[in-house]
Length: 240
Image (cartoon, rainbow, N blue to C red; front, side, top):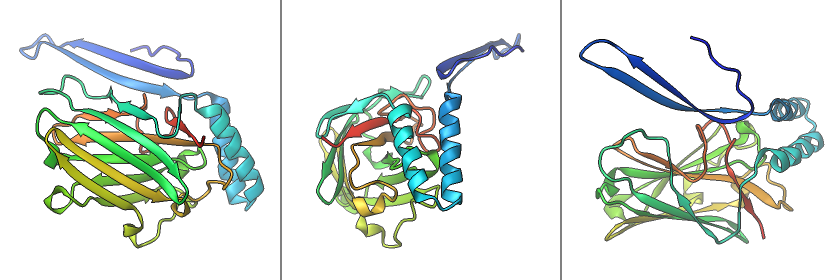
């Protein structure tokens, strides 16, 4: 099978195979994101600068990454839909979700409101992604799940790189989970101290939000391929 040469950007690859059996025709579809080689080089430069202990160089490269790698912007306090689906032919109706990102004095607040026609609120969770430096290795992941009695949420946090070492006390991330007649509302407050590598005078912060449920439905805020491993496609939350 010949694979075409693809330019940088987001592409959808479709495959159709006639099995000539009782299985009939099988179809598959996958989103593929190819980054600009110049941005890949910037990420490599960032890793090199950290390895050499050059904080100033790493900060300069991070600033270039954030300026050049991300295009979609979000105003603070503006509600954004979480409506990009990577699920093919899900059973039942998809939930509708939205998120409001609010930079505050002592941290970043995110409020996610979900209307779920399938009443699957007990089997859903929300994942927030924040990439303080714009480099994939510094993606911070905040997994918010319904807590006891559907009131208090709990958070699992993780990261890939050395800039994002989290404190052992995960309660530092304030979370709540409220069941509503139509679904639920999850809220998280992330202290700025957790987002290592984020300069005090930051103006734009790459963020992403995802909602999943037990049926395999995955909804994301931006058109991303895999927000857990790549920040490409994240939106830029503006400070002002």
